[in-house]
Length: 311
Image (cartoon, rainbow, N blue to C red; front, side, top):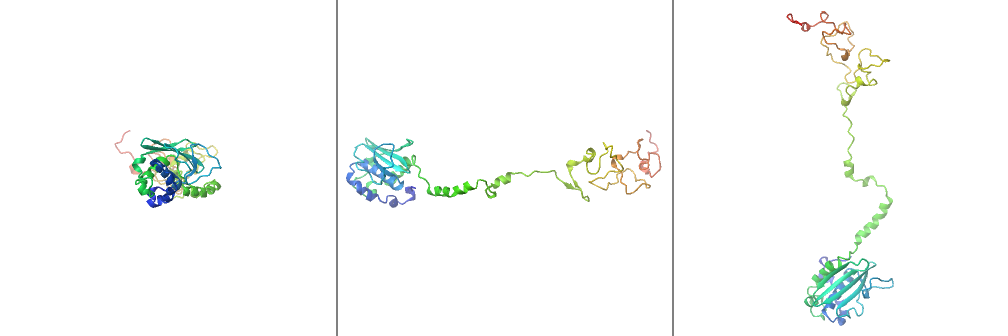
């Protein structure tokens, strides 16, 4: 993987330039040749391109072998350049055209025909072509190489990340073998998003062993099979109401009658509140338990009408 100039020192980035330029300086005859040679140096040294030779042919064979050196007669044309490169089994073609005072360089992807380009002025950026040192030959060499990477290489070539490739290779068998996610792979956010089912609150009456459900109020009056026996609204024929029914919420019914119970009745027997008869009613099902008006059987003085009361 290539490393940009910003991540390298100037000497390390251009390491090997002197040896490379010494091998071609005898064939360099114009300033445009220096810029093409610099582009070749950046591609081969920092991006692992290998030169297959001259030409603009958009295909290659397995017999072709790439090289880090420039081929013979790479600058034989006075105004045009064409060099073929191979990297990661993909073919690239470097094209250059000199137009008046400018040099236009293109890098073409042979398979997709994607093209990048950059324009330079050789007479402005290059000094004496016989100089070997890169800083003397091209004083702005670092700037020119940065432009090569951003404008010429990056648009058409993405170097693979070796660390990412090796990591994916190591993780592939694990993901293949474990087709079913385990508990550690379940997202904790999904667990928190699962809301529990809320049941009606169960309350417990103080002093009673039976739980109290507010949604079950009145069930004993409507459900003949409810706990505590059938209600008084519609008693079953085979199971008539006999005596007071059992209250599961409050087994001991408080004394809410308008007058004290008859002392002759069983004190352990709790009356059914549904059988209460208001005072003065002619329909009294239990005269012993509820004495009729006018009798003096355990009547409270407060229940007598006032002397001057008229209906």
